Image 1 (spheres, rainbow, N blue to C red):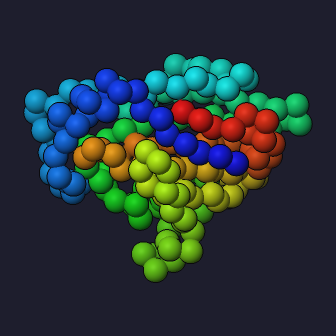
Image 2: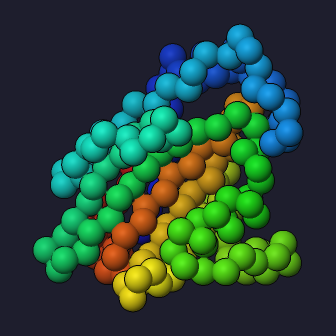
Length: 169
């Protein structure tokens, strides 16, 4: 129900020192660039830290509610545009059993949030995989030449999993 970004001053300073213009997915990442660091945040009670499932994920949390809603939240960051919004939304759509969309359709599926820390693009969609409804809520946040991805994916009842614990990384 909510989304906000608050970056630690030292991270912002490091990122600003490394800031470069927007890159396309075809450009290799700069060699001297430091690995990304997570913003400082306080996870809501009930968000259980999990080991990242792969090297592309910086942070992972398991969430659940009393009604049986279960979901996972992951945070990832990549250099540049990371393939662009359309490619990433279509990748997520595939993860929940939905077909790809074209650029013209994409505008109907996303909305832009203007946060004090910068703009974010939000997508909220429900699909089905193995007979189970799956909901995915994702935020794509370009910041200082990198793209941050915040993704919540879980049971159809995912909304209930977050109603009492708004995301405030």
